[in-house]
Image (cartoon, rainbow, N blue to C red; front, top):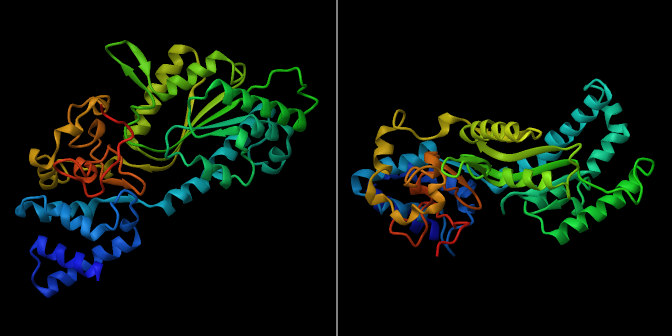
Length: 372
């Protein structure tokens, strides 16, 4: 009954009165809702997609509603929990293990295709033990990644945040020392300092790359999460500065973010004399997925109207992306993207506007930052 009422509301908002027209539009939207969109975790209690769509469209002027609906029907990219979990499941065998095999092959002059020999080499196990995994946000799925490794990643090797307190770091190093003595006693003794060698930075999504690494032109210095990690490495208390590798593992990222991270991380590490960052993206989103005036002038015209935007969205966090407005997303990414747990602010504002703002998004976002 609730689905029927929501469908009737949607038809009323869109002005669909002909049974044939309703039959051509509503079933496909309801199928998408059942398959994916109802699972959005930030919908209010009792609210589901078709109802949210009707209320969202009702905010637009009558002449703009069909164009706004085309954003959903033709362009929307929705990454479900199941799809994200699949990417997490792939991360350990398809990326992490492969990097370890590559290192063992290069260090010992073994052909990369001799996988059995590489896996049996003592160095392969040693590098497994000396790997550190740090989540870069609450969407990093660190617990799921650990479980997907089938015991290869222990609790003492992984942490849900990239800034480690001294007490936690000491605990992790203590456990690392015990593991090294157990796995390679001939190369490690109780008096030798234990340090990690492989640092894996993990996150679910990047739209622009700015929060990971950027250069502040006014302050003339690098900023971002990657810079902070390298600062910790240089300190030498957690990572072996004589032998280390730093990886950034992203489950989903745009080509804009990939290019940005690769360019600025290379500049940063080169200028500082540090080992380069190795970036791995399991599911890249290419540039043609972003909305543009060239491809969708009518849709961009509607989304750019001031009446469909709340200026409160233009806060200091949006300014980091180099724009004064979030109407087309952080750093003007103009994405039509929704993640099941939260809509990234790199998407167009019409998708993620908070529920308490004058124009609320179809998939309202909960910000990770609190404005005071």
